[in-house]
Length: 345
Ligand code: ARG
Image 1 (tube, rainbow, N blue to C red):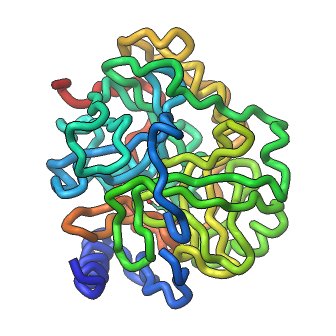
Image 2 (cartoon, helix red, strand yellow):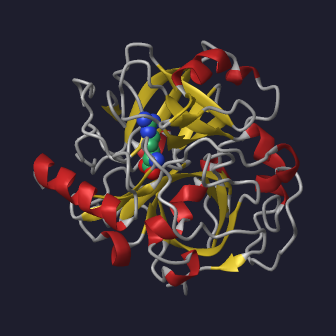
């Protein structure tokens, strides 16, 4: 699709999503000159924990229904961004998306003979997720089939030195490579630098673009821009030191100078991710309705403007959370109960 058409669609869908004021998908004035933004193609064999979330019913078949990223953190467990499961993205509850799949082992989305498409047995949104501020933007998916333990990426725990400013990190995804709706068919990765909380807060002090919150977010980029995640990368991994430190969550445009990418800080959510039923053992079955306790205590909803809507590109809507105004509407799947998802197959 042409860039202009992608922009028109994005605008239309932004309106449909109910956003009034600020453009959620901005014409990226300062888009990176290279084409994840500024990344290079990589093979999923070298990063087997990166997965694509898919629904062809909702997002079309040209890119195998890809709409967000995710990360394998246990043989039957994937983490992604909570906003990827919102009604605004999915058009309904996560349970209503009957062909929701996690695609593993497929570098090129069109190579439908590669890798596996695994049904999602249950989904749980972080009870501390706040859609208005994007705080705690994480959800857990329990898979109907196990993947090899060699595909698991460890989570960074609190105090992990990989969160230190200046740490080299890598972000992965099948999202927009230009900021103009050029959604990738192949997996890309870009090298970014973990920034100091002060710098993140300076970039996002709480204006219309949103507010950085050091307790639940980590930001990464380069002062000059050029390398970043973008629309369609949400939920995908930010990796440093061989551990998962963040999930693609939001940002002002893509790859712009002084607009680092903002990621869900995973370390405060380790208990939520690992504690719910099935995590430690990789056992299948979503019988657990255990209430997560690790995440909720430290996280309070505050009023930074959030940002998410559905955008269009390449004939498929893609989850976004670029800068803008909260789009209101129904919230994400909420609560801690395990919600059955899909029907298998
Ligand atoms: N929220 C977007 C998505 O759903 C990701 C935006 C990331 N933006 C950035 N500049 N790092 O795909």
